[in-house]
Image (tube, rainbow, N blue to C red; front, side, top):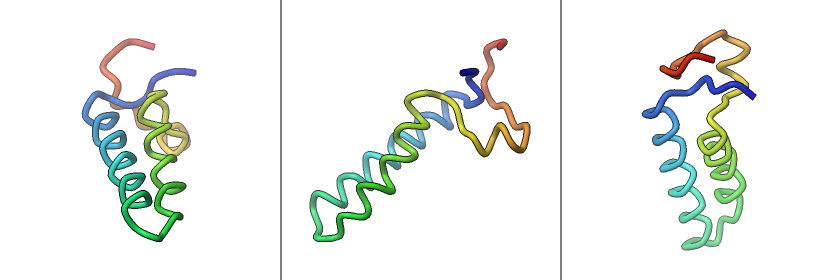
Length: 63
């Protein structure tokens, strides 16, 4: 899988995912954890399916 996300995109998604998962742990709303897993996984693997569809590439490395 090719990387199509730059450092700032990845960092923002990882932080957002962790915050949403933290909300699910601290509150009674468990759905936040599931929603937080999506940006967390995309940030960890460095590939966003929506970026692929829209042909956006913020990754500085050559693929």
